[in-house]
Amino acid sequence: MENEEIARVYAKVAMNTLALIKGKEYAMHKNFDEIREWILTGKSKCEFFCLPSLLTNELSHLVKIFPDGSHWCLFSKIGTTLEAMVCFYNRFMRRFTFGEVVYQMDFVYPNGFICDWKNEKEYTLEEFIYRITNTP
Image (cartoon, rainbow, N blue to C red; front, side):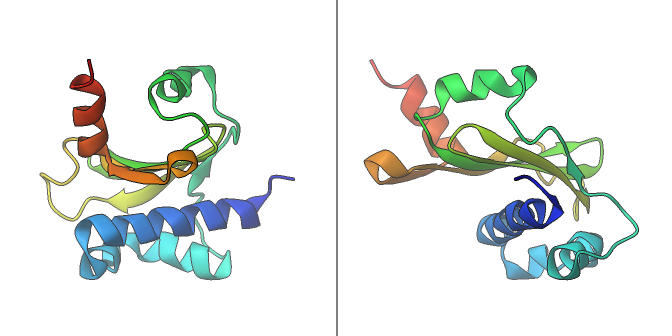
């Protein structure tokens, strides 16, 4: 059953991925205080996640390029806001608003990780794009 507690688990995955990509200090920046508080306590004056929790038609094209049943976490900047998408098994997805990017040039290009657990491989988004564009 999907609920806010499950959404907070997805957000925690995104926060850990952000720390892996940009470092712990970046992930601990004050711009992300509200979502960190929501992850830890469930209390906040903001709503951070967007439904639906199942992958929608607008994002179904991602399923076609990512490995079958993979897990992924992607970040992109929309305006000046950092957005994260976390997906498990190429099916169950949540999107989160993290807050204002720390620096204007952050996440101009999407970044993230793809876990192809069936084949025991993990890729950065850049590595994955390189792999699929250079495969005969």
